[in-house]
Image 1 (cartoon, rainbow, N blue to C red):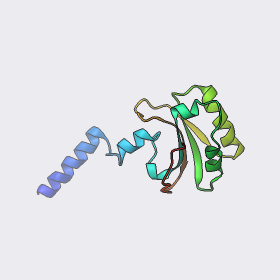
Image 2: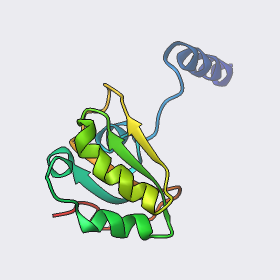
Image 3: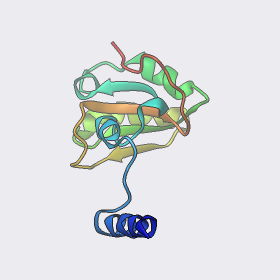
Amino acid sequence: MSEKQSELEQRLMVGLHGTPELKHHEKVQHLGQFRERIIRLLTKNQVEDNHVYPEIEEALKDPRAIRLLLNGDLAYRYRDKYIKIARKHSKPYTVVNDPSLKGNAGLVVVADHAVDVDKIEVK
């Protein structure tokens, strides 16, 4: 009987609090993405630099890359140069506006599966 009670308690908890999310802390740091799906990442400060990081264009050329995500906290003038590169390489982009995201990520190039790139940060 305790097994059924445990299952009932689990269902109640899901009903009250929603489905538990895997690696939530990791996702709030990386614009809602799992770390292992990221090919390249720029910080907010790097996106605000005047120059374009060539590493991002290279990442968008990667056949595993499926999308560019940009932090919605950044002004359009900073995001626009990367949007143009995404369009040039026929990659969709999304501007992420989510106040629950707490990381310093300004831009990520992601795959739809784990790619486990060792160094995602551009120096």
